[in-house]
Structures are given as C-alpha cells and as structure tokens.
Image (cartoon, rainbow, N blue to C red; front, side):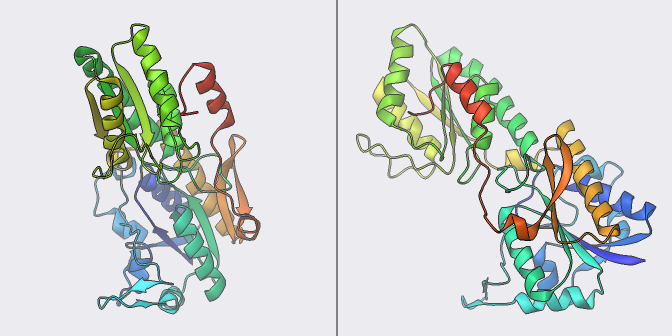
Length: 352
C-alpha cells in the first residue's frame, strides 16, 4: 500500500473530522494507507515522530467522531518550522527536521488540511524537501485564496447569526445597542454574512475603513425615527479609530464600539465577544458536505498521482488549482460583491 500522511494545521474549525473521515474511507476503498500526524507540523518536529495509522487513531474516539468539532489529530497554529522560537527565545530554522520526518515515515505524499498561513508554510516545505503535497482549505475566516469557500466558514456564519438572534430580544427589552464582535482577523466575510442574515443595522469590516461620524449619524437618524434598539456587527481585525472618544483602554474592538455608541447616542450599549465559539461548534450540514467532497477529492488526486494541488470549491463543484499557479499572484478572497450590494440595498450601514 502507498502510505499517505494526513495532518490538520493551524487553528481548528468545524468540519475537520468530516474531512478526515472522507480521507480514511476513500483510502480504504482504494488500497491506500493513511497515516495521521498529530498536532500539525509540531508532530513532525517531535522525536519520536508523532504519527500513527489513521484507522488506529479513530478507534480511540466514539462512533460520532466525524460529526464533532475540532480535530482528532490535534493541531497547532504555533511553531512555524522556518522561524521556530526555542525555549531560550532564539528564532531558528527547523524546516529540515520536518522534511527529515516525512522521509523517515516513507510517505508517498502528504495531504494537509489548513488555512492560508499553514498552506504557505507547507507549500514552502514541499518545495524545499521535494515531497508531494495536496492541500485542503479550512478556516472560518474564508481567507484561503483560490476557493469560493473553505471548510468551517459556513458553520461560523451560522453560529454568529444565532448569536444575533439571541441578542435581538435583550436589545429590545432594555432598549440597548448590542454589539457582536466576530472573528475574521483581517477579513470581514463572517461579519458581512451574519450581519445580513441576523438583521444588523451596522456591519463594520477591515476591508472598508469606517467613518465613525457617518455611523453615528446613521444610528441617530434611526433613533430619531423611532427605533429603540440596535444590532451592530464588527469584525475583530478592524482598525477602529474615533479620536472624539477615548477607547485606548479597551482591548476588544467590540467594547470600543460599544463605548463610542453609548457616549454618542446616550443609550446603553453592550458588547459580546463571540470568540472561539465560532470555531468549536459541530459542523453544520453544508460544512459536512463540503468537507466530505474536498476530502474525497484530495484522495482521488493522490491515487491518480496528481500532487502539487490545492483542492478547491469553485463554481459549485470540487476542483483543484496547482500551488504554482496559486502562489504566482497571491490574493486573499475579496468580499462577496453580491452580499455587499444586498447590504447596501437593505439600507445597512457599512461605515461609509
């Protein structure tokens, strides 16, 4: 049997286990032997190497493991082998150790499930070590280039939308402004989607630098026309600057926005930082389907010997893009133009 390494790298997200299940089942039907590598690249830096047959790892979990959040292989978003921080605080290059581990495992190739940062690191490792690689995109942020959607993103939107549904009645009961801060680092994909679906009046995202004076004027206009409560969504990676009100002491942008709204409008404002709840939820139906399709397609490419690709979801079907083409002109996915148009047509304030 051809041995294929499998790992999950970077932050966890809903759907990783479903992808692993698809890889295992497809491999067993096609005489391939998947080896699960623990804790992402950290498992390859460890000695002895932290890797076991995937079917043996699965035995340690219950029958419904594939439908759960997280990853049975474990993961790590630290320990970049090209710039690894030693216990003494020294930054060193340990990429050769990862490459050596892959060779010692005698793998035909590696299937890696990761986000944009992980994919960049793993692609560089594959180039330096000359080992075959297939990537599967996962991230709640949906910032992996080349694919319309990544595993985990749809569930994160569902969780955030549900949070807005829960915040609406308490906002109305107390006539407050409720601010929901969602994840996304430097992208506003979650904020835009859940803001529309959850009926927010304001959606603020890193891609659109907000004019806070216009946001406040917009909210005041709603208040003057009889609206008593408000829902606002803000992405965590936004640069929120409003010098008229001191917000320097607030770590989270959600709390900063709540302070700005409360002082400007004179109404109680509360912020909810949704945080890792978005990443730890069980995958919804769409993410389960996406993970199953992309995981299965990755194994199909592997058994055909079509390495060097990122498996993607494009134009409503599974496909692949060569890493060479992907990194020739790297660009993060832009905000969905149709959703932006819809938000504007619905009268939602985007900060402009």
